[in-house]
Amino acid sequence: MYFAYPYSSWERGLNENTNGLIRQRFTKGSSFENITDDDVDAVMYKLNHRPRKTLQYKTPHAVFFAQPEQEAA
Image 1: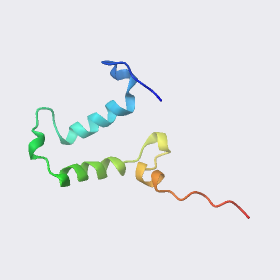
Image 2 (image 1 turned 135 degrees about the horizontal axis):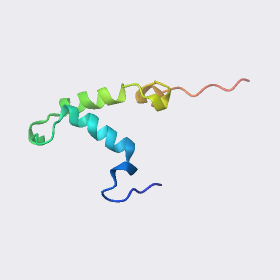
Image 3 (image 1 turned 30 degrees about the vertical axis):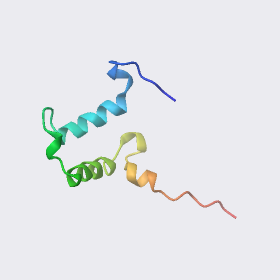
Image 4 (image 1 turned 90 degrees about the vertical axis):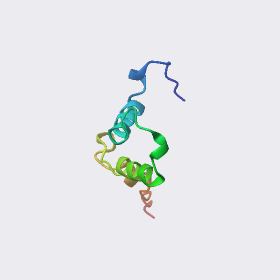
């Protein structure tokens, strides 16, 4: 388990990067009262289907739902 110190954004790299990607769609100061479930689903889809260098350029969706390799009999 990992805990980052408060106000130490450099300790939360993936979290801060993801927040930045979300903020591209929902800019600072925008009202969240007008955001629909479809808007959230669209951003979630884009993030989960975006290739990541740390995953050898596979998408998080593909890695999460990948079938485990069958052991040779």
